[in-house]
Length: 220
Image 1 (cartoon, rainbow, N blue to C red):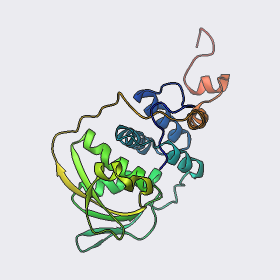
Image 2: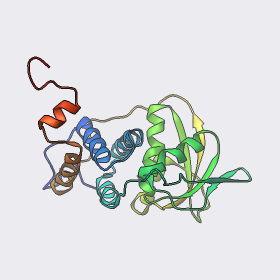
Image 3: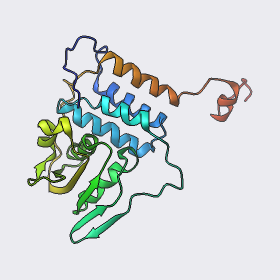
Image 4: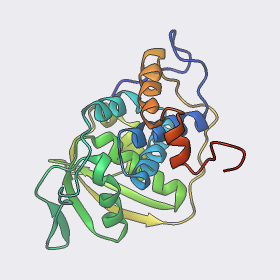
């Protein structure tokens, strides 16, 4: 995955942790990602940023291709095979990524294929900050289980596999998260993200004000 060094020429005006999270959250909501999943995705991106990985290029690619699931879209079906939970179809992280982490957190080994392996790692790593839950992953065809933070920080992160297994490693105290020195986005990528956040805005006309419960006169 492409990374943006802290002082790379052409970077956007300094983006704080709160701006990162708010921008990513609004972009997801504007793309009709379910609010709860959107919040998890924003936290996952922060977790990647704290390990010096810029998730924005991958996020923009996912959001550009995102199609809003319909009520007829079935959730992924995981089948138990021995002590493992396996899904026979590819999973969109923006739709069901947190579900994979929930299954693994319940003490099950989950075998899956996703459209963004890096973002799935971010979802797993964010739980170590929010709940003190540590996971480890095994790339498809790999032989060694590796903790998520090491996987993100290693060369694996540049070619994060879309096929992997995830399992619970341990539980304990929540890991502290240093949000003071985050990678900075390129000006181009940040501008694209801001354009996506505009999708959640509505015109300030009389109809929308009425729908929002705002009065149109002093007597309303």
